[in-house]
Amino acid sequence: MNADLVRKTKRTTTVRKHERGAYDRDTVYSIIDSTPLCHVSYIIDNWPHVTPTIQWREDNRIFWHGSSASRFLRQITDKPACLAVTQFDGIVLARSASHHSANYRSVMLFGTAEALSGKDKDRALESFMESMFPSRWGQLRPMTETESKSTAVLSMAIDEGSAKIRTGHSVDEEDDYALSIWAGVIPIIQKVGVPEPDPKNLPGVPIPEHVSEFKLGHP
Amino acid sequence: MNADLVRKTKRTTTVRKHERGAYDRDTVYSIIDSTPLCHVSYIIDNWPHVTPTIQWREDNRIFWHGSSASRFLRQITDKPACLAVTQFDGIVLARSASHHSANYRSVMLFGTAEALSGKDKDRALESFMESMFPSRWGQLRPMTETESKSTAVLSMAIDEGSAKIRTGHSVDEEDDYALSIWAGVIPIIQKVGVPEPDPKNLPGVPIPEHVSEFKLGHP
Image 1 (spheres, chains in turn red, purple):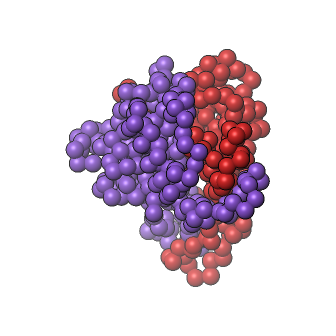
Image 2: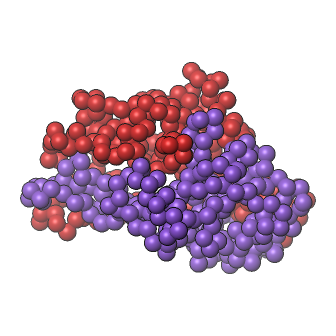
């Protein structure tokens, strides 16, 4: 995040106070890598839009994809975008209403959405699959040219943004600790369930290790 | 959603194809009520921004809150906003790369963010607490005037937007069902963990039922 400290500071101070800011690159990467879901925000016809989609990271870039026919993806290419990755970790109960809070890890990134094309695009899609399900790409029916053409991949440099993290219990007013009120944290956990095989699988097809050992977040 | 069908259709078709659309009000409400996390998108200085926050619903309005000092909340008051509530339910593995997908429930709402004030604001905060933790509000140290002043509450009518839901297994090309490839769904589950009492709780303070029986989503 060093390259754009001024732009970063200017823009993200518009959003929230900074006491929970944690800006080092490793922290940002670890939050991005912890879950594939993100929310991308963009402007169409002077209106803000936000849409959930699946993201993946390679080095210092973040990627997402969708249908080439989607007006969303066509309209935001080469336009300003803001992308959030959020892990909601818990609800923090305090001794007064105002000090209730949430535990979370979040990253907000600003940048310009660039479209990939040709071999760069195909390679990015393969890399996406392999990062989530190692060795799956080579086992699949190969992608056709039509399928490749109908898929748009966008990417953004991870150069401007911020990470915010809140953990732990409430921070109450000093006097309030004397009150007989239960305070604490209710953890919220995102977990992987038991894989459900498609009933249309051929008989005897084994469950691959990239499914049985699947974990959220990069290995 | 009936009041604004034209605006709704016009704006949300810019975002995604509609085959997964599910527009009835009960569906929209049930997704909003299923998790407190939302992402609010807005425009500041011609840049899109998206920030995660906690939302709650009352009848046909959605609410969120934060610090009155936050430039974010001040800047978006009476301005266009877009709000997304998303449940990421699973990863869908198919027999070709292109048919991999995600199972999810999501709502995208468009509207103007209106600030509440005075008694309306305090009542909304109480209602928020009570909807999440029944009977907690009356047990807390009462909110001071300063605390009330330092809290901003925004709300938006649920009049324009869309819900999208994807469930089930992949829909593959007919020929691909003959391939010996494992397809299926890896469920992603958001669950409530075991409540962690604050070590600074007074000895013997019992865990309230609104904590021990806490569930995500409205009762």
